[in-house]
Image (cartoon, rainbow, N blue to C red; front, side):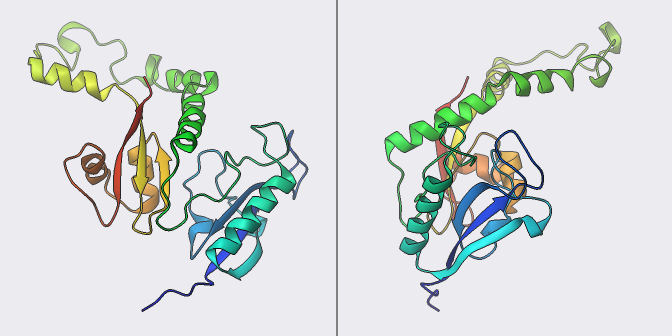
Length: 223
């Protein structure tokens, strides 16, 4: 069964209240998609509004190329926050994700840089530190024989695995329709798309060629 070539649409997420970047009901994200993509919570920079009434469709019933053109026009019209040109949280000028499309090295570097900045932000690191220290840590105040790790000796192989587990990576994942996604959290990504993170780890680490039509790789080591 052939897919309808005019199944694409362009949508906007609107602000539910005034913010430093724009007034209430101004768009904060522009995207192109098909099916239920508009409702996917896969963007750490611009998640969809909880209230669906703040999601609007600019135009439906377009070909993919028409949708790309309109998406790019809207992003140019409203401008991007990261570039200081406008009010949108988009991190690109649109036009990515075409079937069979492979991102250029320059585009991958830009996406990598934006993900690195998000990961290294002072606010994020402070929050991560706060939720794990003091009484919030299950091992808080436990020393010697009371410690859960008392008497445990790790093999050299285990030590190597532990060292690698502390490393952070940027992953590139490609869905069955050849759309490209970038993430630094495979567990969260898997939950959003109904994918087992153990299998995602398998494909990005070369232990499996694909999983449910998805392929992937480690794009970059973050730290």
